[in-house]
Image 1 (cartoon, rainbow, N blue to C red):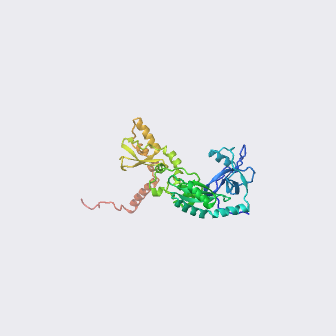
Image 2: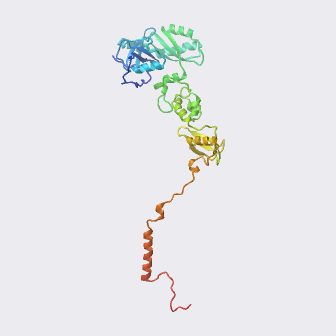
Length: 365
């Protein structure tokens, strides 16, 4: 009996090693993902034919949990090494495929999550704790629950754990999350018109600084740079490496260019296009000239040797050459013009000299 459980809110990882034969020891570990992008590696010691998307029952502490397979094959070995996990380390096991009873018990536990979250918020408020419980995740067997909370400062929730355990008769685990994880749990649409990256595929949250926005020449407007979590957008880091690589080829900002026309100061740069705009005024835009970054670096090298080019642009520096059009020297219609002149002479001889002044032979003076 197969049921569609809402275990995962993230898209499956792309198995880019699919179809590639791994030379060496086969990896019997799999990655299983649970709610709120919680994932862990488990050992498939029984050799179950697992594939991405399969629902499995795995060992937990205590009891068992239910999740979906998110990664299999050689890609698991690669991700374990990347995460600093020893491949030969002792891992919890994949127990079995879930039965109808396992799925029914898990669905009952999921149905209690929202009510448990509302009650736990009320209990935390009665205890006077400055925290917000954002979500509750029950274990597959319903004997344990993880309470995800947000807090700006350190919270002593030892008493809260005892009250929650007595109220709901479960084992309690408190796990703190940040504003980015909270936004990924809630979800939404970003300014790009697509679902939030943190709610679809982004699992690791790297710190984002304003330096990434300055490097990309973005306006330092908090309303435009902040996401729904009130933090800087994660996508600011996506193209930062490309900008860093392109910025290394740009001329320094504090080095002016000396030419025979005068001194030019850097006004603005187009990093991706490799263009630099210079001004004759250090603070204002005056006599702006746009040149390539390579041309600017060449002029800086010439200035270091004491040489000043005639102009910033190479086109203005080189004298303009006069091109001679050989076709204009001998016009193609030169024969037609001569023919017309001969025609006029014949017509004048036959029909008289029209238009020419002639003196009458009998006229005196």
